[in-house]
Image (cartoon, rainbow, N blue to C red):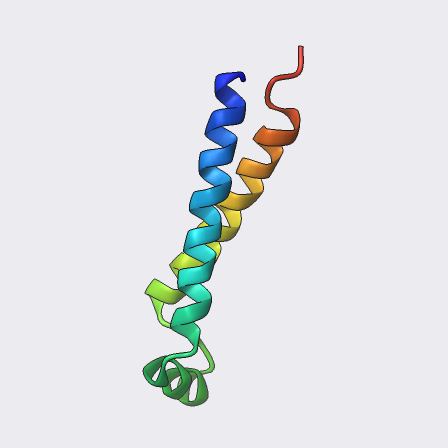
Length: 69
C-alpha cells in the first residue's frame, strides 16, 4: 500500500472523529442556548465541524486518487 493511501486513511478516520465530536457538541445545552441567542455555534464547535469535513474530504481524495501513476 502506498504511503499516500495510508495518509488518506488516517485523514479520513481523523476527519470522521472530528465530525462526530462536532455533531456531539452541537447537542449540548450550552450550544443550543448559544445557537438560539446568537444564531451561531461556538468557535470550537465550528472548528470541529469545518476541520473534520476538510480532513475527511482530503483523506477521501487521497484514498481514491493518491497512488495513481
